[in-house]
Length: 490
Image 1 (cartoon, rainbow, N blue to C red):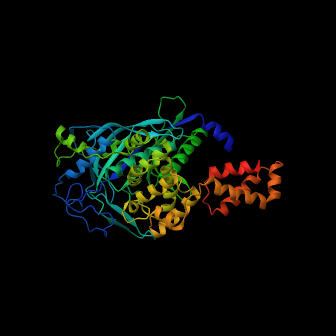
Image 2: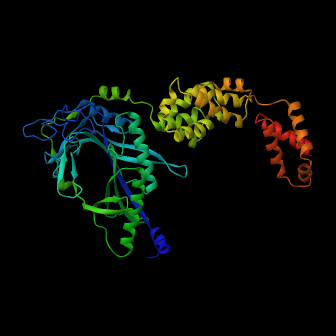
Image 3: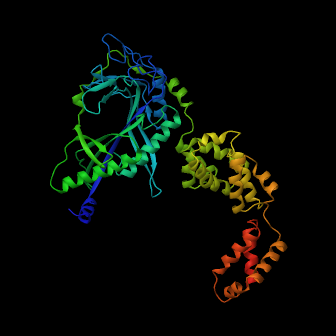
């Protein structure tokens, strides 16, 4: 099938996508024991009888895990259930020492929430959450490069997880990426997880099927697992949708299975057949009592939920009249939001916003500076410095060209912008008489260019602007300069 034909046929189909995200909680200890929850420790050094699955041991639920789950449910607009239950989910992996995982099945701690995403066309869409439940992580298998043996590290066994499951509401790779980025921003803002995808603290599985446009029957789904970046997830989802459509178009059928993303070949590859719920032989966990939460407990957790990125976005648009583009950049970086609001108190202007989004962010990226360090009173890029610099621009004391020079010197010397202006005599030349004298001299000096301009070669106007700026060492007020050049060249 050629590309043009495939593209035409592809438009007959729609994708139906649901996402399951595992969030590794940043609690001090593991979920059912007192072992430290410390990713990166030497293999098998943070384990005990409980998390290594020794016979006769009993799990004890970590209350901090419950608080994190409730907080996540509140932040994603979920119903927090006053009663939830733990279950055993049976399956065999070498790194699952008990032979089952303790999780929540029929009675999760939170459900029926939603997350609002903003789409590329400016519209919004609610992605509904089926459930949020608590569970423990398994250990980790490591395979020798020559495949001569496999080793098991149980440090991760018993690490507390939240699994956040959507309804099949997503329909494109762009929506999947937007949803994951929004959820990641919420989780990290709550402070309940590092969200580090490379370390597995935030990992997503996408369930993908395709069907003809308008068909109510769902197609056979495949699950993509263990993809550790937003870009790779979007790329893998795109490939998988195309793969399924091509199989159906060629008369084949989709096999339900779990697949992995090969980043080198940029294809999905089969991992195993996909299990159904019945394969796991769920049963209530007999060693953990029902989890019952009072209204007072839930209300107390609610007071600890900070301002969330989507709430900050709305506030920045309303209170500061930022554009959606500006508000999104600032709202989804908590430290940048703090920086912006501190600077805004000193100089509430559009100039300040532009300098933050263009010059500040460009500089910290180029120099690998942490935005948090810019909040220090000793930083040359502290909010007060940028507020003062942009205030000098707004007052007409300096022009944009001079401001760039001051900004560069400010970074290296940590001097106040106003001190740099005063010491170097960089105040903008605003005297009409002084500028007019310079322009008249330039027109006399470049009489032939002036004649060509008057004869219709209007591009030469820029020539005179450049010469005037050179003569005034960039201190001329641009608007006044342009007016005077036009006046004397006409």
